Image (cartoon, rainbow, N blue to C red; front, side):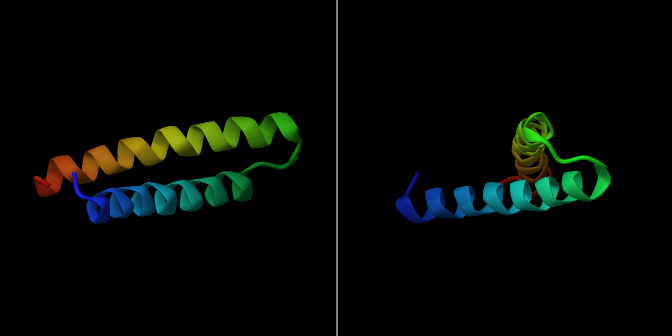
Length: 60
C-alpha cells in the first residue's frame, strides 16, 4: 500500500466516522461522557463496516 493510498483510506474512514458520530449526537437526548464514548465507538465500527461494504461493491 502506498502512502497516498493509506491517506485516502484514513480520510475515508474519518469522513464516515465524523458523519456517523454527528448522526449519533443528533439522535441522543443527553450528552454525557458515557454517551460520547459509546457514540464514538459505534461510529468507528460503522465507519469500518461502511468502508468494507463500499470496497466489496466497487471491487477496490
